[in-house]
Image (tube, rainbow, N blue to C red):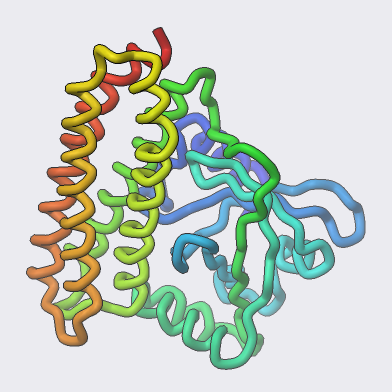
Length: 278
């Protein structure tokens, strides 16, 4: 893509917590910063991604089916340490190029999500690479734009809301069954929500209980909501893991989870942010 176009997308992405319009509206997009293989200069590129469980995401070096790999791919092969921005977090990651059957299975999952991936491969003689980006822990999470614990919580919640919106749209637009990648998307969401609630249960909520005894009733309600959401996550996971599940069944479970989760996030923000930022 032309650099001026890329720069517009980058600026819009950063200004809107990962949301962009135009040709990428409603797409899964991240910003990938690599180190130039020859120049050593840092370069940031908008790249489509696929969830792949809680520990890594996948990016595809399609270059829209061009005969050569994109520059960012050559960069990360030479320097596998990269920086990823997902709209909520900025983190360091290690890039690994998938090979053999693992690459083929991942690319087949991508093709299920969009015929465009198949068209790109058909246009070129090269085998389009699939790259896994696995986050590296380098300290406390870097939440983009967070200036307080309250804004950090709001940003994380915003990412969760956006993810469930994306999944609902993907399920609604899918066929009568459920593709392999969409199963992965749903299971990754379940894993992410559980991890966030576990962190709250073990860290933030006990700290608030100790410092704010008057918050006992609020924390009790939040704890009950966590248990209810955990049950809905279990149900969604069971549904999407079934071999012949129907689209309508999955959509109904996603809608149930979305309604409960969004109401919970709204209540938590309304009650806790004044306490933790006050």
